[in-house]
Image (tube, rainbow, N blue to C red):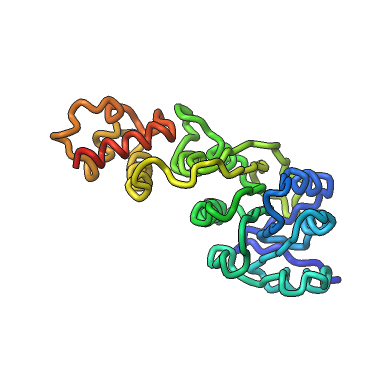
Length: 259
């Protein structure tokens, strides 16, 4: 079969090392919690090969690239309707999957944050994620309060998932090689079905806090807080990067109670 040409505008860097592909797939831990697994951006199917060998799971693939889709249709005819030529970011998960599922992929680096927010939007259904990201993004996802990498993604993901940095991947195992190091992380859904606060306000507080991360929260959140009622709230004298998920929940409740 004719090989698929990697397309820069789609952020494609095809993994070529089968040992790393096997290691990524082995990082999934279904353990009876789910059977449905969606691979995003399979390219030429190096992860798919190992996924399809696992009898514990039912695998579907989605790729926006028509060339990849046609290649995979010939390579894995057994997939039938479980091979989709579609945009993952536009997918309605409930239309394709019933019950809990996992997402896996060597994700396109140019839309990696959008992929993570899409997963957050579907957090009640997506209970595990194993993915390859740019190392810098992986470090942001796993960062702890107080570090310069800690930010919006760190807080939102860690509010609903246990986030683990699994291993670093060098550029030479991709075609074409990216100009950055890569890393594989795993997200495992935690027991939080609903935060103990107004979730919409929580998201506003976190975003506003980090959008002006050099300012104290009293200044960064000036449009959200009642300054007269919150003169003694100690967390407002800190910067956003100092607050844990629990701190943000508590601050959100304080803001809601003093409006």
